[in-house]
Amino acid sequence: MTGTTALSTTTVTSVAAATYEWDATAYVKSELAAGRKVFSLALKNNTTSSSTETFNSREASSNKPTLQIDTATTGGSPTIGPCAVFPSTNEWNRNISADPVDPNSANYMAAMNASTTFLHPDFGTTFGIPWITVPGSQPKVPMTFDISDESDPGPYPFPPNAPIEGGPSSTGDRHVLVLDTGSCKLYETWDSHFVNPGWHCGSGAIFNLTSNALRPDGFTSADAAGLPILPGLARQAEAAVAHRINHALRFTVRNTQRAFVHPATHFASSSTDVNRPPMGLRVRLKASFNISGFNATVQAILTGLKQYGMFVADNGSDWFITGETNAQWNDSELNQLKQVPASAFEVIKLGTIQH
Amino acid sequence: MWSRPSRTLFVVLSSVELAGCAGAPPEGGSASESPASAGETAEALSTAVVALADAYVRDGSSASANFGTATSVVVKNSGAANSGFNRWIYLRFDLSSISGSVSTAKLRLFGRVDNTASESHATAVYPVASTTWSETGITGTTSL
Image 1: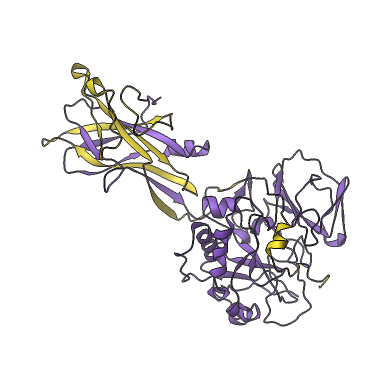
Image 2 (image 1 turned 90 degrees about the vertical axis):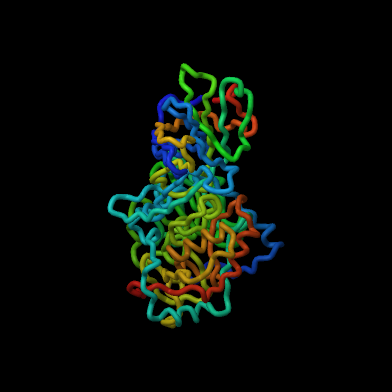
């Protein structure tokens, strides 16, 4: 059924053919807000006349009917469900494309073997780090930690079947990431084991996603840098569906320094080599790097890396980017990341290095 | 303050290992963007989305004809005294490719009033509930 109230009215004249515009902003916004991305419009003439109005259709060779959409491309926070993932002023959400390069960038890059390494997607359909959301009503269960002095005490809203990184029998990092969408608090653990009715973990951290507060200096989290994990994961809905990542990612390198820079609060190395990257070091893809030959998913990731970069967040294989486990990823698409040389990155100016 | 050794394993991923580490797929929210908050500089990105389908229909003796594949779309208001010569246009769009917060959406059509004499028509756009009409099937009789 066609609505009876016009969205807008424009005067079309009989002078030479021209582009005419009708504002449909309010209607389009309301349709999108309702989750409807496909919608129809009707055009009618309100002036009685013996003359027709003729416009090019989409079957014409040019000047086809279009909907001209303007979107805001910067500003705001990424969101998961009802939760903004940290305020828009948070370091994770800061566009660093204009930040100066660190004076020691070349040495850091050498220590990260950048000249001989390519990016590696450490995520896909079957591997990566899983995460779940739970409602505010999710029962909270008791927690015990190996590193209890640096962990946020329980209870945590972990269901018994919360997905564990690598699967229930994994001997790896066994991260569990749970976002409580009632409180917008993020609960993350490492080396996680369900011990009825609660969980025993290596360490655990709670992040209030409405706050920019860091963990206390010297405190670990579920990763070795004292950082949250979920905000830095490459997520399929962003990279492969929306084709836009508006936050920093996280990656690993083999050799880190016994030091951290904010927003990291913790290190996991005994090396005092000042050329090794401290935890929290942030790199960005150089603006000059040509991404036009990559698929749309990889282009979205690379654009995010130009605008928001990625943090050294753990020890691991050099230049492994972490992302979520998601059956919807296309692994062969992600494999194009392996064509991006680490040497196409640069280190942005670090904050105060703490030991 | 070094409290413990590094934890991430140096795993060389092979197909055999991958087969054994199928993590549960995540549930949870899809990502989207929220509008720029006050005081932030929002940079506009403009995208032209071409109609997914378009057709005009007629009443009167051509009410059962379909014009969906024509290279033009046509509107006409023939008036009550001269009814049976009306034409109107349906357009369908798919904004699945759009991400980010929409600030403006404008329909753009290229054309004119077909008269050598000067003439001006008030032409209006209306919302249509159906999104499933067929471009090659819609007629004035089956119109929405």
